[in-house]
Length: 183
Image 1 (cartoon, rainbow, N blue to C red):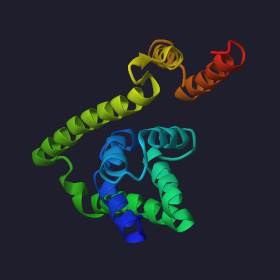
Image 2 (image 1 turned 180 degrees about the vertical axis):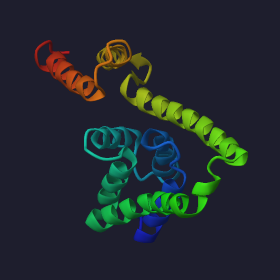
Image 3 (image 1 turned 90 degrees about the vertical axis):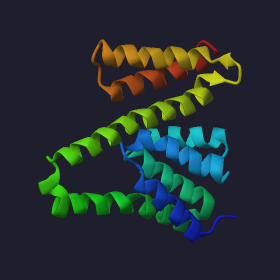
Image 4 (image 1 turned 30 degrees about the horizontal axis):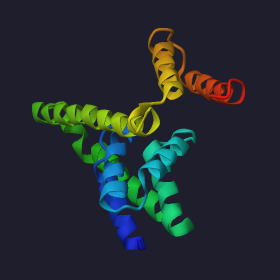
């Protein structure tokens, strides 16, 4: 059973290493919540990511809020949310007040290159985690989710439609495939 202090410390740790935003943090969330602590299983994690993606706000904060609630109710929700946000708030405040004059130095540029490179890897890991639970179920490929995924890529990259429109089209297609075509 999880307690508030453990929940706070885990989400504080996650918040301290959320470089690159929400999707980059999904691999950290997965490692801490599913693999290390077993607070959620794979399906629950992917479901929570889906819920967090479909609600307003940053995905990592939405996940923290939902996971905290699932584990310890409203107090857990508040605890996890505050913990995951606190490091970013402190860092941004420090950047604004203290570090800003040094942002153009060579050392800071080299540090940011390392952070940005790591972010690409973290986002890729999030892609693998989510796709293996949505598109690749066991040893079979889920054709409908794969087709919708590829369509979204084409719509956004080649037809330059807004990502919100792509999500709405995806929802419509998923509903149509299920209710009209029985797929």
